[in-house]
Length: 282
Length: 270
Image 1 (cartoon, each protein chain N blue to C red):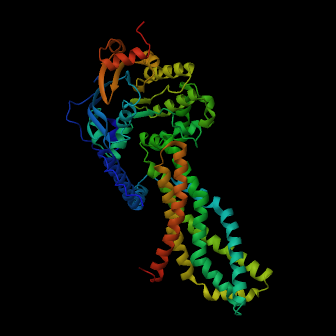
Image 2 (cartoon, rainbow over the protein chains, first blue to last red; image 1 turned 180 degrees about the horizontal axis):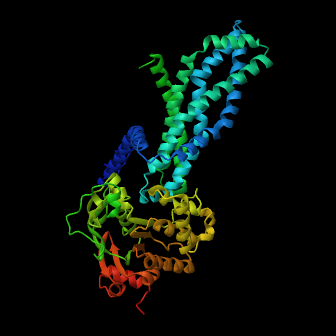
Image 3 (cartoon, rainbow over the protein chains, first blue to last red; image 1 turned 180 degrees about the vertical axis):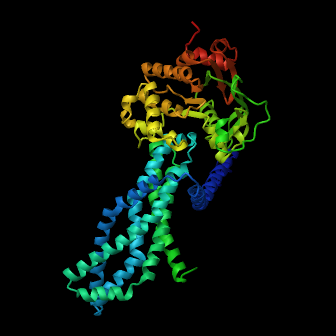
């Protein structure tokens, strides 16, 4: 066994490098831990500014119509297409699963409940995020990096009032409308699969659906849709509005907007559900 | 001052002698400071902007020209100092009062910053639609007049992306002047343009000053262009104005950085 060689004492230079590395790592860790809170506070600040400027004249009606057309009308095809397949696959799984213990008659009820309370608002918001949210971030981000937002300011036009408020209102109004559309088309898709392909009785399917799903379920879904509508447009606008770093920066902002929106939808879904049904708090 | 009365705003005047249209100094910048974190960019800039003249601020890259421009039109708030426009300290204003004073200014950005979703006509009409109650026909007539004055009326229904850099600049100047702003700020107006377009933009700045009597503030480092258009010239170096005067005076400046900058640009009074 060779004798253990004592390690050489660290030189002052090595020590200061080590200290700097530890300090950098500490700073990075603190920033990483604080970043969600910084992001959330920035979102609330933008929301507050939007409320402040939203109630002040001038009211530019055509901007609201344009934003609703973009978020709502423009998403109809995508929402309908996804709703048909989501409804269809739900029917496929539930009929198959319920048949094992002879409960396939409950398929319509369970699908109706799932769509109205959860699947409709969550999917509609996700579709709006992927189609309209990302486009909003890119548009506002491009305006930011090409000084178009600065140009608005120099022309004494408040950019939050002009660019953010109409989009927020459109999200608040149109995501619930798209949710209702998703629910209706989803039920039609499920009905087709369950009745036409899997042989369920159409009367039983609709009767069970009407028996279990009531206004409270629909309203729970609509409340969620309103919250999601504000959240996804707010996140998209915040990321685009404060984008920096040229085209690459706009790309990163769009990426962040989509990821943050998807996470926000799922987290808010739990929060709103627990608030509405009064259970599931920590 | 009609503007402020029209908006019903009561603006606090700076503690300086009241300015009138006869005051040859349009903007007084006093001891302006701006930092970003530990980086002190503007270190007490003091400068007079002459009314109805073309005032150029030159300096090497990184000297703080763009930061000064952003403070001038209050895209950012200075840390300290005063920015007196028509007797009102713009550095201390916020909200609607600031918006009212901002309408004294028109801004032409380096990349023109035209709204790319709007046609040329809509871009120029935008300030009129936002800030006046003019009828549609009146707006059309004013916009077309202004586009004609800058030779771009044929492009009225085109999108900015369909125009050349020089034409975009013309449209940007037409938009900046449609509300008859008293002061026009140009940020690096000739950067990235070919020599012919550069000369065209220089003529445009001179035309705007002569036709409409505006005060022009041009941020630039293009010395050839500077010598063509400047009435007054100020040299910004490491966040401070170190030399100011007419182009001839600046050419004879003994300040080392100014002299070096002028020598490197190979421009002479001849």
